Length: 131
Image (cartoon, rainbow, N blue to C red; front, side):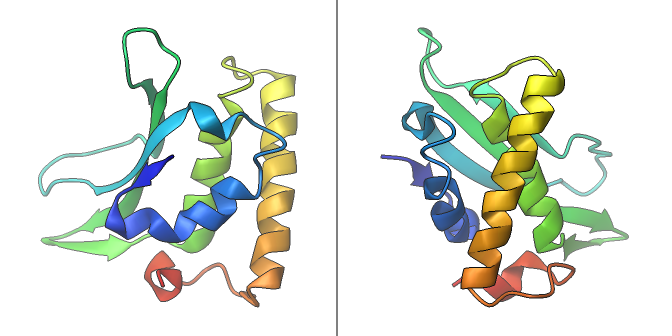
């Protein structure tokens, strides 16, 4: 079972929707984080091994951009694109045509989920869809 930090529990339906495209059973955790004040974080998301065998992974997704002394939530489109990219790494580690083709298929599936959830504007902050 995949564990989600509270701020990304809303991504569970999206991850489950692509279980036929990628081996989601390899994911141990999905973590949402914000960049600490004073740090200039340029990475949007990451996938790392969760154990020494390398058969379980942790996906980390940046949820907040830094604005002078406050954090601003990132748009849902950005979060879902970052998630799709990291999920594609479960099948294709290199950034090659196979990886990006799978990422596109995952994003298409996410689009179907958005339509099903009646979310038409993905430029709004992700917090609107957190529950």
